[in-house]
Image (cartoon, rainbow, N blue to C red):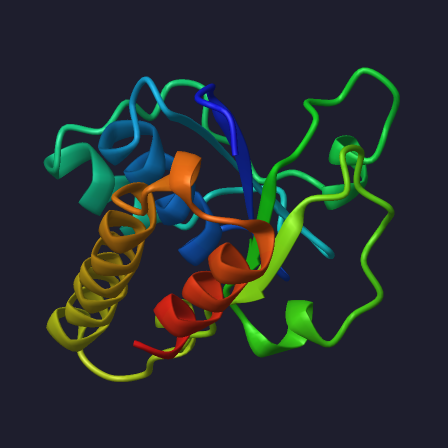
Length: 164
């Protein structure tokens, strides 16, 4: 694959926690090589307050973050996507729009921190753990030797990262 900036879309049903985290992590970890985006099949219309609080504390920019519908990325003029990663089982099982650019896809499923019940500390810990897991996966992804992998080898690596 050629050396260039790759567009990556992270999908979740609500686009309020995991996919937002994926977007901001990739935009930091993959700066100069990757551009991260996020969306949802049924977006909540707001970013979860614990997500915003966590990523703000970790010095990620939050100004332009918003919960958005995945259809925005199938419209004319949308960024041509190179990769699409589903982060929740619900989004992985839905019929996705036709993405411009015929991106490579993989499922990187993980539990929804917004669904955790318990004390505030337990809920915040779930968000921090989700962030940690995503950061590990994204770090592995951005360090793949894109220019030396053929499409089949790259797809295998993407699936393997989702299993880690």
